Amino acid sequence: MDDEEYRKKVEREILQIIENSLKERQMNADRATEIARYIVSSLRPHMTFNQIHDVVQNFDEHFSELVPVVLEVSREYQEKVKNAVINHVDILIKQGKIDEAHTLLKKANNNEIKLKE
Image 1 (cartoon, helix red, strand yellow):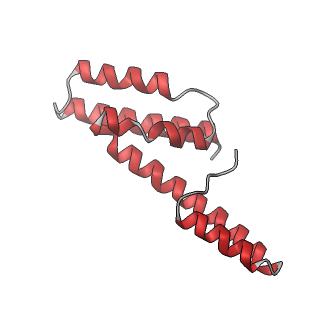
Image 2 (cartoon, one colour):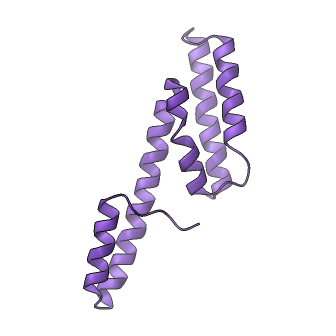
């Protein structure tokens, strides 16, 4: 899935939350409109996965209803970072660069690693 498809997936998940909340009367139309406007202004076409991740991290500060989306995007981001680190560490170890591999693992453990754009 490319970044644009991922952004649209996130938007669909948010729309589903709004729709379900409206049907169950857990949200009124004003709140739904407020969330929709915020999402449209935040998630723009052609964002990178890193940008989408960074933007989504703020959603739950404004709208507690969006916590499930924030958690899912965070989980997926961490999984991508983990896979990238594992692959890179494997290459470094095969090259005999144990110290570099160790340093990379420490950075990953401290959440200091971001995916390349």
